[in-house]
Image (cartoon, rainbow over all chains, first blue to last red; front, side, top):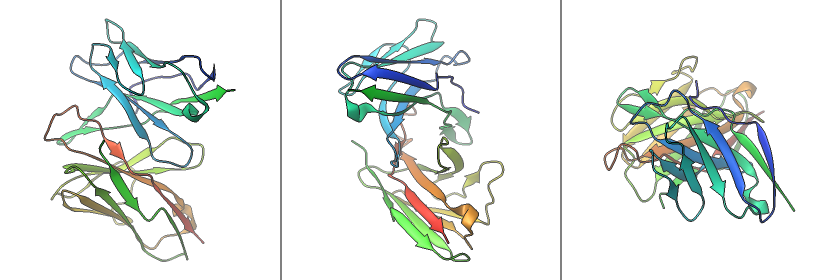
Length: 112
Length: 118
């Protein structure tokens, strides 16, 4: 089972910041938080990941709370092309490594 | 960035046919590859994990004789759907990561293969 919970859907106005929350209350000390998104009929696209410090790249910012039990993905200026399902993931231990289990994600609608 | 190429993008075939899907990591060595399937309006479901040179580890409920996975090199994995039937119609997505550089490296995904069995 996925180790994260997210709201099923969110709306955002074009040009505004989109803030997507995620709860991961059972995360352990050395587990990273990963964010991916899936645009219709495509494979998931990696966005960003972090451990405990806030992270920023050309796509988004990731804010992780001090207790690491939740995080927020921020798209600073959402565009129509950012409409997608966004997945927040904490990987699950697997034989010889980790595996990525997807939850239901958050369906973000960016509206003109 | 890391690129994963999946081929074919679409395949339509008759019931009873076996179908092979290829997944290649183009600019990195994939020590681990993952295969997912996705039904309409659902999330991705992990089918199996394979480490290069080893047998794949299948998730509960996934038939290993039905979905044959080969990961013989660090850049190529294949999924063969044997004797496919209409209920096997789905969107199949591969993913790869290089676990040698750093354990926290993200997985990268192919663009998926839409399989339709008539």
